[in-house]
Length: 123
Image (cartoon, rainbow, N blue to C red; front, side, top):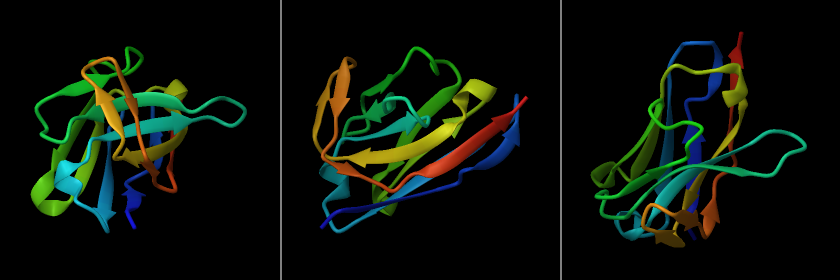
């Protein structure tokens, strides 16, 4: 059974940076497309970024483009989200997602989910 565990969330000020990590176990991580989503209470879960299993293709939501970077280290079974120039509107629970279908720079439909990590950006 695939398990995804996020870490790296916290409370920061606007303009700061954070790096989220997602450690995967129980599956063939190197063959999984991976991604990040976020959710604010009362709103639908929102796509943030995705990366193909090869690492050769990434797709980032317009709302974070130029500020957030997704990457992966298949040797460590870990995916990352580098978040720079954080804004209060980036405040959310961030979810790691794995497996499923990645449609080249169009969309990502995962099969597995982590439990989420809270990111809070104060103004």
